[in-house]
Image (cartoon, rainbow, N blue to C red; front, side):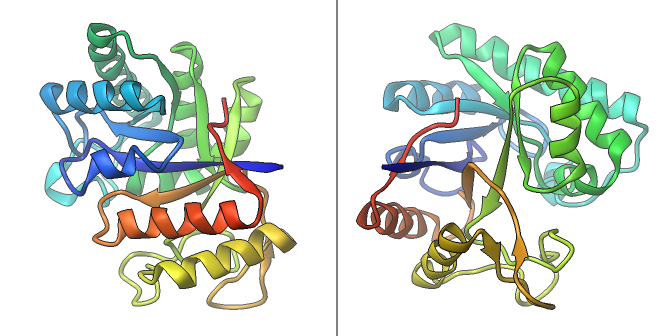
Length: 245
């Protein structure tokens, strides 16, 4: 049976985390930058541990007003310190409940910047390595390459609910076609990708991508239904959902 990981960005104080943690195999938990606080981190970690879901740190720009979706100019060394502080915060809270943090996944604008700028990507990957963690990165990006160069377990992901450009990058959220809201449409596209290895884009022919994980954004209104439809659709095709580590 084929298998793939299903991950979601959780612990952000938005959406139904309890329902999502019954459907995904990996949870990217916000760690006080773009969202969350110590109490929410603890609750999210406890629930993920109870559900047997793999846990990752989800650091982002410390800009909750913009939910970490606007680039905050800073040097790579400052990014390294910011990411380290957020990873450390989640690891510290995790110790309170005996949970284990396994990997790092950058959030929002930080992840998108690291997709194209190698110094930023290296800052994130090297920080993950120093914490003894793996890396979850958007497929085909500089961040994936940086993780591999750092010698850490690096897993590539695609997005079930985001549209792609021919460059392999995500369509900016400002674009009307950026998000896929219909769970059935998302599943149809996903199955086509899994069958062919080719991802449809909005500005050209489908592109080749490799991935071992699928992301669903936990803050979207249709997140739970999206996860249910995708998980059921994968099962119908003999594809099991399991964490990548």
